[in-house]
Image (cartoon, rainbow, N blue to C red):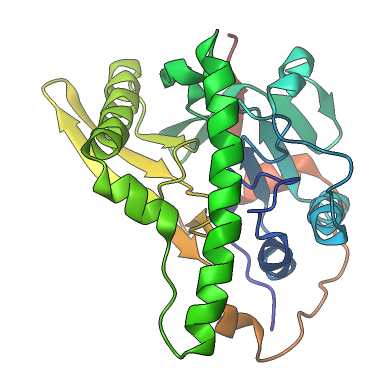
Length: 281
């Protein structure tokens, strides 16, 4: 399999260090792409549930692949989320091709895209409610484990897989309404700030749609997650799209390594007319 060359890739909610993370699949995806800019939009490492007794080789391999991409000239911007909030004390750190921040704007061909994780809209990640959120995270992790066992049994019987967590989310009207409110709030803020696109993570719900208000319109995008949906956002030739991992795409041929590129940030920027702006909190 030859590497694809999207201009920008956005990943979020990988949750390395948890049982639900599909690290093996993510490694295959990372090996298959060579973007000019990789944006890690929060919750890449799960600091809430991190346990040094559980961080398997496949999870370490994800980090290794990202480091390899840095070495080959890809610019990597890590936008912090709530599960990796311990990194926020180091916001605005920049080392070569790597940048750590809480939110950013990329400007390309006159269009501005506002990118942040999205936990700022979630009251359950703050204060005393954070304890309940952490407990919910443990419960979610166990639900994923049980779901994998059920899917193994279903596959053995020749039946299609199912997602317990999706059924729970879709079956609870309050959860469905909360997702809609989240998207609407993000869109309204982006419209007020004059952005053309807004990209979030956090809610594990891949999405791409235009949201209109009386003040204007904006394209809302969400990169989903690598727990259930195995999705990412890709920008190619000025068009955003949602990528969804499919096992069959990676069983035809081994990934061919590309020649090592020099890490020239000005070349990367000039190739796609991209400008990155840091936003102060």
